[in-house]
Amino acid sequence: MSAVPGCVLCEGPGGRLVFEGAKLRVIHAQEAGFPAFYRVVWTAHAPEFSDLDTADRVLCMEAVAVVEQCLREHLQPAKINLAALGNMVAHLHWHVIARFADDSHFPGSVWAGAQRERDAVREAQVAARLPAAEAAMIERLGRMGGQGN
Amino acid sequence: MSAVPGCVLCEGPGGRLVFEGAKLRVIHAQEAGFPAFYRVVWTAHAPEFSDLDTADRVLCMEAVAVVEQCLREHLQPAKINLAALGNMVAHLHWHVIARFADDSHFPGSVWAGAQRERDAVREAQVAARLPAAEAAMIERLGRMGGQGN
Image 1: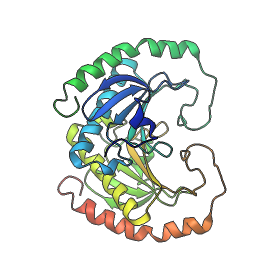
Image 2: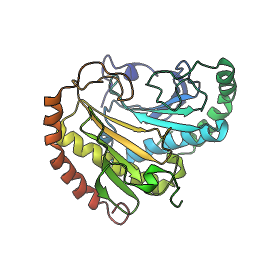
Image 3: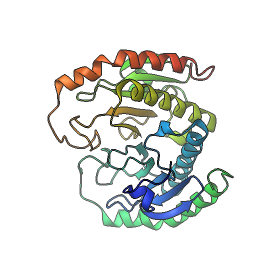
Image 4: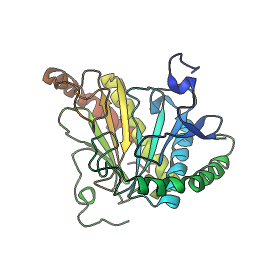
């Protein structure tokens, strides 16, 4: 599907671009309180996951798994959260969020209310490890071959 | 991985069982306010999506796509929401939720605060169409072959 006027994910990257392939990109979402919040954005405007054919769904989720694995290896989070909601921006994007036991919302979702104050020192510690995690993402996504890159 | 004592998704179905295959099951989650809330639960105790190998990830997400497609075809929701969070129950389960423009939380996530009152009449209308959606899920998941069923 071609770009849809007014769709923020058709008209711009939607965050700091980490990786851009032929069919998808990875962005750092820059969401306050969640330093390790990434999104895998499908390039074409598809509202729902099942709008993709099987091969594209596999490619998309393998990219999600790569981002997840790199965050796990470099940040040792308490949990990874994955979600494709799209209620406000109905252009397929997967949230991939490394969650920590001391983050402001854990164990609630990032969309629920805060359970404690943010910890700027901890957030900075996480942020300091993102360049290495992103280098690993770029390397592995680039190896996915003629589909992702 | 074998069953983990104390894990509610190792020890029970976690909702009303709709489909049970060799490696995964589909349950109706019975969450108040969201009549079309399903979960694809991986049978083995795996905390994270990337704990599965590629073939199992494909199987898992194809089951998610089947549930999504059946909900779309039978309910015509405003949006499907997909999520694997697991902060409280770290046993891989995918939420597959049909959302409607007039549900209590739309366009917020089901984990955020309510935006309006629940509409019992609308919820009953959605619920009345679930048996047909579930029959379609069972039929298609059963056809996924020697992996899902």
